[in-house]
Length: 626
Image (cartoon, rainbow, N blue to C red; front, side, top):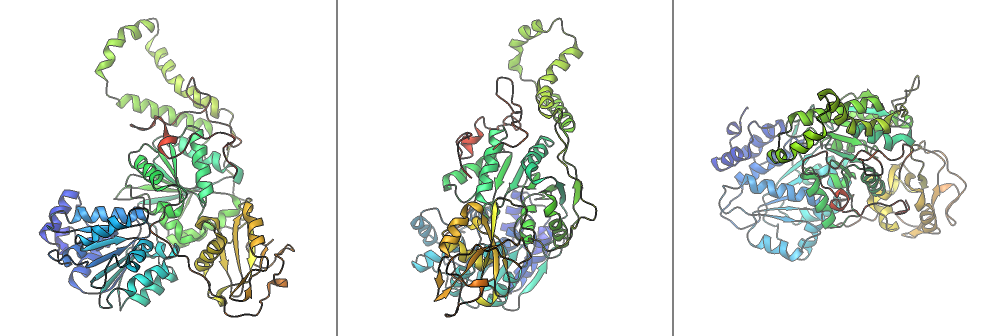
């Protein structure tokens, strides 16, 4: 099938497709749309982020619902507020010629009564985040008892965010005879479980292999010492003057810290994470969409709603805890038929993870060298030359030319060009001249194999703990993570590298939380049973613990008697966006500034105050303690 006309869509939808500019259906659209139009069936579709999944379920749902009815007939659940709004806007565009069509977005952080009124006006389709949807159902503000179609979009991420119970509760209020369509980029066992529970003999389609990365994205890794990670990030940015990127960090704290460092060093950057207010999140995303921010530093949860087609690079400043998450990260680039690059900055201790990712995504990484200073100077110089060469002359400059020509009447053309470009070149040359080589050679026989996530020694700022609960207690990594952050009142990103064994588990937090963790688990009981937590000396093998224990805990981590131990679930509301100087000193600034080549003017329309537009105040050296 080569056109949308071949898929069986009606004229109203085809007119909208023409207006949008769609020409050829993507693979997932070509496979899913005919099945959903021709059959009343459940469907499991695995396809990468950015391959057009919204249209794959949106067009069939629009064609099959009764537009003349004001009853809610379709429900689409998505993990984040941003993605919820994105899907809603796309459905409005798809249904622009469907007279009487209404779609309502339901998500946290906005007026619940306003959203209820939108539904009552006659929304045939509701797009919702699980937390807010569950809340509105419990308040009898929404009735989904007559829906005919339910879509679980980004199902793997909804489960990863702890929405399993919310999804279960929401779907329990829907009719059993509905069609359920599950769309996901990866297929972990939790997604398989939900498919078996809520679906009846679903048709399965896969675009590429499970968890495989799209062919539009190339993968590179750069090997550096851990202490040089930030300097490597700056060099990669300088080596790509037109970079428009998302930079992934593991925690909210690291996200904020890296963004602040970039802003302080003169780059057009912003942060996106869960500690930002809704207004700050909107400001950051608006600036990013307008290209006023070139480098968006984000946590994995926050980035799930980013739908920007022209992202050139994804930079993994830190690798994620779960290997499947890398697939979602790399899917932020190479969208809408464009190509992109996914970059990983790794230390020697993390090399084994690269091989693990290669097996999952079925793609090979290219090992690259961090550009040296002179390479960057050349790239920047030629970028400026090309920009000047293609710049249109502003006629308003004519009135100033007499004065300018008089100033340079004794200067030859060759000398004038040298002087002009030296203004820019000298800043980079002075900064990078005699700079050290950041690339590190792989050790002979370096082990790039092994289990992903088993290397816990790469982050000197974290503590690893042993806890005497595991799979026998009903935990997997996700539910244990939710349990810990629930009882300890921590953010989602504060607990990481969770490794669940049969009768015990391990997890990490930042070292600054160690005292709080150990104090909390002093004589802590749940359902009458002691839960013992100890700092572990083991960095991933799961075999040893040190002698510092929370008092009252079992010796050796043994179990105390006292009833079944079951994890508590966290209840969420709405979609969630989570969002110093290093040894290279500050990068040079323009003449009149203290230091650092200024990035603010690298894009047309770039803000002169990127910090303010990104929801930050200008950082100071004494601003924060991390």
